[in-house]
Image (cartoon, rainbow, N blue to C red; front, side):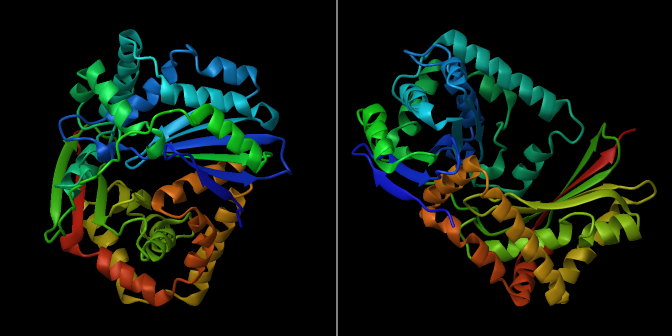
Length: 412
């Protein structure tokens, strides 16, 4: 159980305080409700680029990292389809340094052409290194575009095309900042050896005078139901042939999410999982196989991927995966296997709560979803899933007409 208290500033900034007197540290986490789904098809990769740009300093603080390091702290950030998240970890008695730094770049980010060009080059090199020059590196571009035809999940967080990042102008950067990086579009979580009144005073002092932005009205197009199997064959310089199968699944806030996540763990949760035991160890059709979900706020993807063993044809590999998925539909999972995956995920979540930063990020994320107390109900929602619900989820997801398959054929 993560205990917390909340309040809101007049400018709309939501603040959550989690007090933990057993540590000498504190985490200051600020989540902005903006990700790649807020981009347009003509300008993608912007949210991720802006994450980098935010570390270029503000008008009053030319180097973000130095003051934090001098206070004994460290920081980082990440961007997803749905959010951009920044965090600082430092000794609790130096917590005001984090308030000063985060508030100053929210209020007065330094818009310098040289800084923007520097970060554009950094992101373009990342794009080339991980998405263009890596074997299978373009998989997310291909699988997203194949699976989604309307929703902005049709491009990955890095962006749809390198040119989109290259042609970003300062005017667009300013528009993006003043639309999304406003207090009323953010959640601030302070966790650690802090006091509620202390955080209230610091939040008011450092964030209270920052003007609120306009209320964001999102009109994200709803992806229509997929009613046909989609297949894309790719001939590329990859080490071995590979299969990636993506199935549409429910949104993160859907009650079926928990059964879907457990289903993923049953299929691919380590060396004892069904896919590994059957397809790698027993039948030796694949050298590796995995299943994972995108966990997006809107309806996302359940993906199964595998690298084919020598001698395995593409058709045989695809058939073997589909047979395993069909088994999840036709045969009810045993109580023993279900209990095993439930215990595993409960242990994982309980262990995660020992980390002060994890608690802060989870509180921010669930506030973004609509209710920060949702973090305290997760274990119960997982443990209440039944074998019948797992079958129902499998039957809804693993339909051929709901699938998008990328088949990589090796040129070598």
